[in-house]
Amino acid sequence: MDPVVPELEEHTRRRRRRRMFSHARIPVRMMVPNFFTLLGLCAGLTSIRMSIEGRYDFALAAIVFAALLDGIDGRIARLLKASSRFGAELDSLADFVNFGVAPAIMIFTWGLGEHRSLGWIAVMLFALASALRLARFNTLIDDERPRWQSDFFMGVPTPAAAIIVLLPIYLANLGLDLRASPILLNLVLAYVMVIGLTMVSMLPTYSGKLLGERIGRDWVLPLFILSMLAVACLLTYPYPTLAIGSIAYLAALPWTWRRFRELERLHGAAGAPAAAAPEPAPESEATPDDAERTPAGPRLVEIRPNDQNR
Image 1 (tube, rainbow, N blue to C red):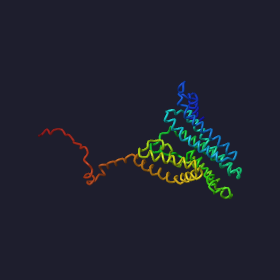
Image 2: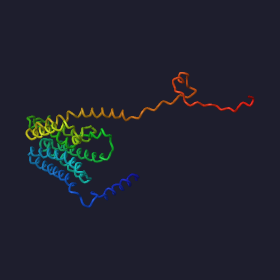
Image 3: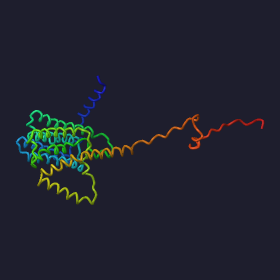
Image 4: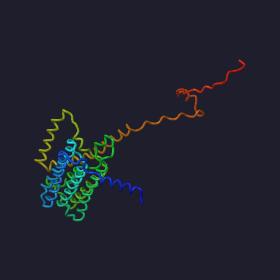
């Protein structure tokens, strides 16, 4: 029997005996982030229903709404100091439904259903990749990483993947329907699988948590204007806005990877230990030139007894 197995079983039993909340009375502020998480989960489940009914406009709106809620519930938890293990587990389960299952059902009922089993395999791979990506993210939370690496995710985040995987639907509403040709539909099939693989890959992507940090005073008003402009474009021209955003995100991935490698080389060189000083050559191999270049070390003086004949 593997000696590691008993240790894992004991660790699992300790985790199961651990209380979800450390106090008998829970502050109300601890429930606020979970309310937003549950609201986003309702939006994801509603998106699944709308996709089954063929109402893709409402299904897409529900996924985008769930993505917006997912972006604020964590910040609200940190702002209210209401983070908890229960909230983290609930958020992961909600993300799997909202950004793994709901987009998969939507893209399958929209066009990949024509491929039958092959289309189902593609969307199932996407959903499974989102589950694996969330599980990997949860296991890496407690790992200590350099400060500069906290600005990056490993793999495409599930909310971003859910938005960009629906790019064929955006293009269809703009007049470029990829379902018109079997060859183009095969491209959609490959595209869905590639996006699924990017979630479980080690491709570095910028973390959205950077938006929650402090900003310069001069950038406050421009950011307000840009945010309102983005919301107005999303509400007025949803499909062009989402299409442009998805293409821009995909185009930025190579630049993000190159930036990550540059920072890795920079911080790796800065944090490398200093080279050890070369050991001095043995006395038998020392030359007069070496003696002139090497600073004088401690000298050995031989002490002899006094001369009795003096």
